View 1: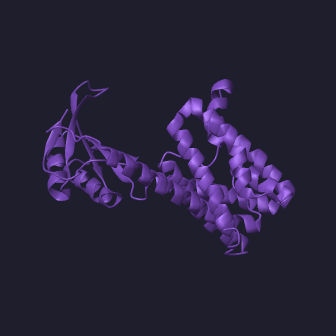
View 2 (view 1 turned 120 degrees about the vertical axis):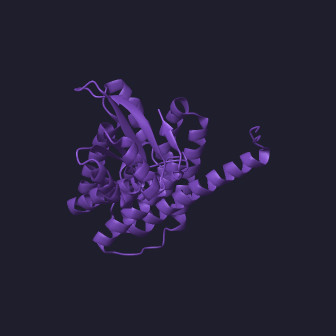
View 3 (view 1 turned 90 degrees about the vertical axis):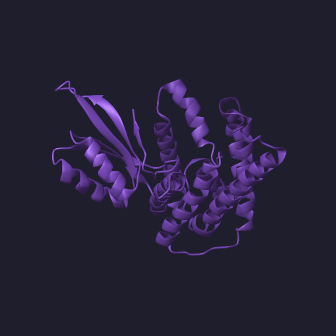
Length: 290
């Protein structure tokens, strides 16, 4: 069957879909900043955090500051990540600035703990949506990619060092209690980004090594209605050929799967790995052998 040709209409719909989610994500992040964090002097990390401190000191518009401070890093990204990423990042940052000015007068709570927790959750959700659609709201990671190659440090180490500097500045400007709340917000937001990018329904990738592999595999197919794959391996100690069962199950099925394996072979070796994304059908009665 010939492949379907991508039409101009398909491209336009793809671009509009991308712009919609970049806008939505940026507005969600802006809502978190203006409704939870800014009124309580709790800051985010990276360029946004620096912008929040400078805006507090100078009374300059926060949205405009975020755009201005991100421009050098967006230009840097042009040579490192390509024009599409640059355009999407510039668009997302601009929408963040617009959203900040729209939500400027909406303050939801003055409770510091509530602002920290819910601000972090909403902010991480917005940033995660933007990242999932190949954009960015902060130039820190772009800068870290460049510096990591020059100084031999990891991206994570550079970002952490940069944020320590920012939170020390927040402590000097807003007080150390607010700085500690800011660190807590950062970690909550960071975790929420992972949730948005990877999803809540993480499955389990399972490998089972047993002398009764085919019997166990057939039982898994019959009981769970999943596909299994048989892999061939050589025992490192015994040098004998081994059959390895490979399959992907949900977290709810994991306990039952172990019970099935132990029923057939109490000495079976089971290896379990988290799977954040899996594509294709997991159902079917076929068996693949490699």
